Amino acid sequence: MSIPITEQENPRTSEIDRLPTLEAIRLINDEDKTVAPAIEKVLPEIAASVDRIVERLKNGGRLFYVGSGTSGRLGVLDASEIPPTFGVSYDLIQGVIAGGYDALYKATESSEDDKEAGAEDLKKRGVTEKDAVIGIAASGRTPYTIGAVEYAKTLGCFAACVSCVPDSPITEAAEISIVPMVGAEAIAGSSRMKAGTAQKMILNMISTATMIRLGYVKGNRMTNVKSSNAKLKERSLRILMAETDLNERAARDLMSAAGEDLRVAIVMHKSNASREIAERELVENNFVIEKTVRLIE
Image 1: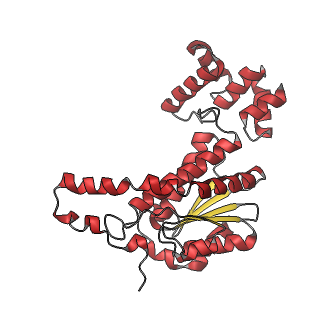
Image 2: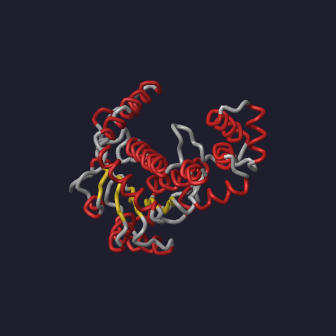
Image 3: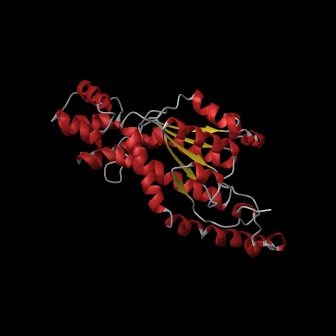
């Protein structure tokens, strides 16, 4: 019987249960050091996926992450962090997990065996040919995720996958396959470890680069961040001061005049527009600050 790499035993950690705590976690750390180099080898595939996703999102599409277990949870996590960080709609990037959101905090692993459910869950989200779908499956053989990717392709979606096993069923279904070869886990079959770390790093790259390409970052500043708590209000203030060269008092006054919306404040300052005009033009231009400022000027 062929055993996927993610399920194989790791000879380097075969006696980890007998080691003192420090030595055990040192072994785990040594294994984790192999993740970034593995991802480096698949950067071209990640970049190609980002370009295809950006093309879809610019034309009214959405991005869906689909997975089960750890893979599904990582997709939901990444999707949920994009709106507050980049000021976009919660609909733009969505995480779809086998077993529904209950699976975020309790095991519903049997739900991953239902291939039809993957397609059905995308149907419920109203996925169309304008959208992009990324199937996330460490082993590359999860029926739920494969079903979703195959269904997405029949619609004409851009369909990619993130897996840690080459030549797996999901790589056969996807247009672009992102396959970091992280090898056997420190604990055999525990793909929440290196495979999960690789998936998280790749999703970070995909979503962040996509938001950059869409215009929601200026330099390396999250200029579209939502000021939804005290920490983010202070961050927004620092960004506003850096973008406008205003002192702290003037920046606070401008934020107040902008309804505590950093995006509006930057547009008001750079285009000398009223709050009403800044808000209206931002909506018209999908909240891309630089484009909005150019059009007002």
